[in-house]
Image (cartoon, rainbow, N blue to C red; front, side, top):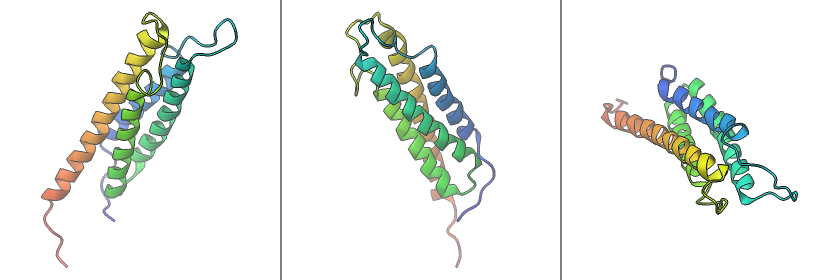
Length: 143
C-alpha cells in the first residue's frame, strides 16, 4: 500500500465537472419535461440516466480527493473516466432523443453531456495514464 500526498488537481477538476453534470441536469440542461398529454419522451429518461451517472461520478470523484492510496486513486480515476464516457454517450447515442433538433434536449442537453462527459473521461483517463507512467519510471523496490 503506497501512501502519497493529498490529491492533485485532477480530483478537484473531476468533482467540479461531475457536480456540473448533476446541477445541469436538474436545472438549465435538463429536458423539456412531461408533454401536455401527461406522457414523457425518451429525452426525460436520457436526462435521468445522465443525472444518475453524474451522481455516481460525483461520489467517486469526492472519494478520490481524499484517498491517499495510489492504487485506489488509479482505480477511481478509471471509474470516473468511464462514467464520463457513459455520460457523453447517453443522450442521443444510447437513449434516443426527440426528432426535432430545436428541442431543448437536442439543442442543450446532448451537447452539454457530450462536452462534460468527454472532459471527465479525458481528465480521469489522462490522470490514470500519468500515474501509470510515473509508476513505471519508479526504481524497483529492494527486498
